[in-house]
Length: 99
Image 1 (cartoon, helix red, strand yellow):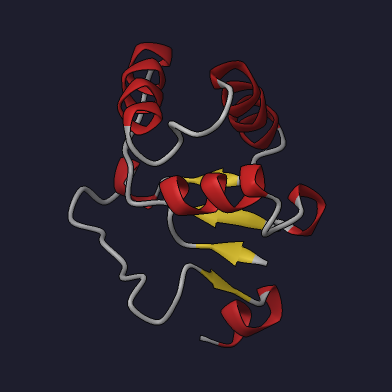
Image 2 (cartoon, rainbow, N blue to C red; image 1 turned 90 degrees about the horizontal axis):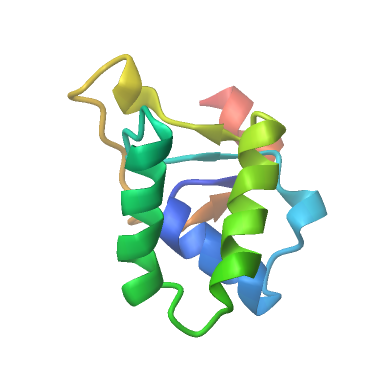
């Protein structure tokens, strides 16, 4: 599956609604360039989207996904990039190659 929202996708994985092993990648509208950027981003999301989950577990999940190259941030190359999650947060990986 391909996720289209870092906040909601991480929340779904942590809540057990999506298996980490089923995630092909997460394409996010974030633009975290440095570790400090990631720290700030995660700290903010932990206050809202991820507040129900243990912080260390969330950070470990994000670190694993980043290390595997599964988090893509198109805004790092194109600051105007934005995609919508109006059609849903997850889509099948095969469908994404057809678009």
